[in-house]
Image (tube, rainbow, N blue to C red; front, side):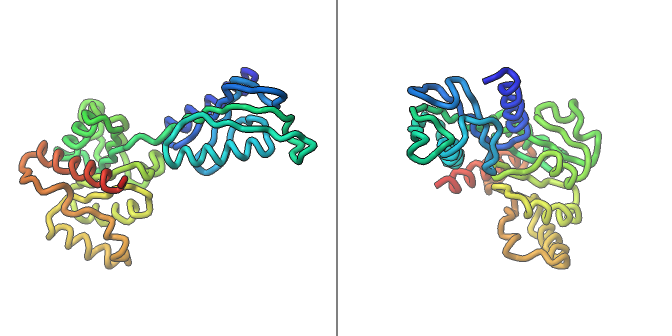
Length: 263
């Protein structure tokens, strides 16, 4: 594999991982007999099935792609062995021989996406950071998403939620915590979040506040079925009073929900 090809593949891998995409890096680690590509050749397989690079084309590459998508779904890296058929037996794209490919999965890190960076939002970001999660902090108030205000956030975004979602797309491995300053903001934000594949969507507020939010959502035609995804009141009932205790309550529910979903 040429240096140019290697650089292109590794650049694509880096862009995908840094962007939160799930991908597989397929690397030929052993060959026997006549093969179209050799040890060290790499190919990136994205979650949508698209590829960058090639491990030889033809049926063998199609098989690697299928196995890569299966590995990605289960998050199971490993070695896979392939026998390349002789061209006279049907596939003119291969040369005969065998090769072993290592499929290395790169999964989206579990991200805590916090909308609203007041006292509770900051406490959630801080706790999530210490628990090892990737954190995104979003607020339309610039002074709340500075490095000084949110030192432990991996990503700080000043602007609208719609712009934040465009810049930092939510995946199925994202948990969203909405802790804004008003129910009208919650009503604007919630429909946007329900269009994402977020694993968890929690909206903070009393039953009365959520009732007011629901009225606005009903007026906007948001279906009751869709709203069943929303956790409100947010967090487990542990008798939390301080903002730190509220953060523990919220993160406890996220952890519990993720564990239940995995079963």
